[in-house]
Length: 203
Image (cartoon, rainbow, N blue to C red; front, side):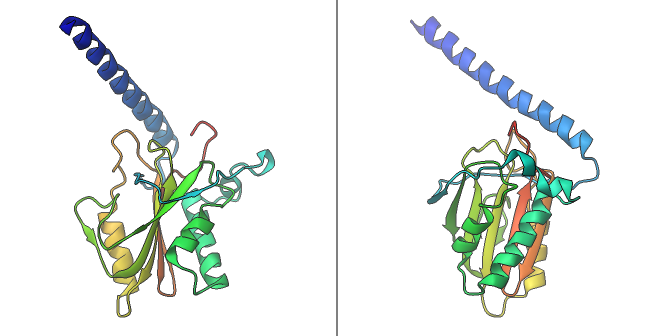
């Protein structure tokens, strides 16, 4: 009986390692094809609010890439549009709106976050915001994680953005690595994302 249990455990461990190895091989291929992009990484938290999966019409697949933009810069522009349209929107409302962007091809979720240790920033504490929301895929192997922050009065916007860039870990998820890190601001709100440069059908 012990021999059977040991054999099963070894088989499960082998399958896990092979799956992780295959993801790394796929990412290496993608990274070689995108040598001019910055790396970025994604992580997951238990979703508090689930956002319905976005349907991406075949005719508009990878609109960002077609326009010479990356997924990160497209979402950052969407963030600015959302804030401009409603300056009183909460961080969570903006995160939910950004997740409906047609260039996102996964089922996403959002959740509120508090100052302190946040996924994607290693051991660095992220503080200086009064309201924060994380948004990302419900599947943890997709290299994507984003945040919307509403800064506290008196917080230096540029210093806050620089802190995010300095501490963002493009490979926070063991088996995946993102292509880019994008930070943007509009008024007292800050957008941060680490993600692939575009969404592929096999993600």
